[in-house]
Image (cartoon, rainbow, N blue to C red; front, side, top):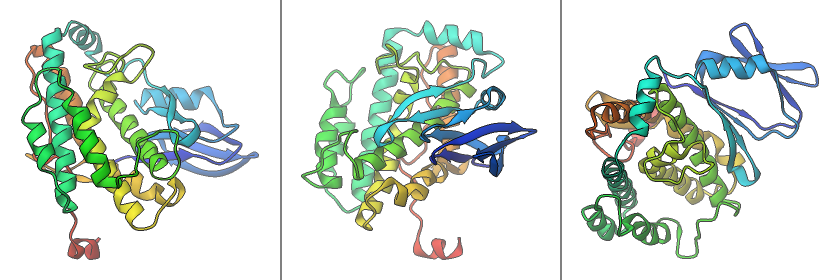
Length: 306
């Protein structure tokens, strides 16, 4: 079962643990409860939010990340558990000891999957994707030619229009992208901790002061899933996170084709994290990615049955 994303956005909320539930209060009045085991991640942007220490400890024991969002829904802090796996110490050591050639090979694999996903997004929308397909085949170990950036220069104007600029500080489309990426980042961080890996020991992204550098690495191939959702929202006239929140949260339930059948993105991330942990232990790279880089398209007939 895919867990739920708990959002805390209203002013002056208080969060407490009550038995096996997270209770949300406002001015001493309980607004509702949610079973802790059903939560995938917590996103907090509520001004004046207060927490009980037992609530935060319980979330950590269940390996549930709590991500704090700042202005324009960009993540500013995260709380993660210290102990996420019975073999964590061994996996930390293997992760820290990974050679530079191993990390470069892993990063090249991630970049190839990201560009392939961007190309498939353009394919689905009937937009020209030939250059991205060509770039996918030319990514070298460590991506020294920065094919990732070259792909982005082609991808964003085609997807969002020539006037679009990716800027975390801008509202509208950019804020929706920020929010979708925050959800993806939290789910990736949870998968990393559950695999017994340290989220700040990255493959590529600079880890200086970034507690989630490895999550930033592993989430890259799945950013286009969020991009596709935001494109559809904007095309439908949605201009704010508030109006697009439900669809953006739904990115974690998007089904990808895998050898085990249709698999929601949150579970795809768990398998990817586990495969990276095993790769560190074996010192041989074998990452688990879906057989198709973007979610399965839902037909009109399938929607009618849902």
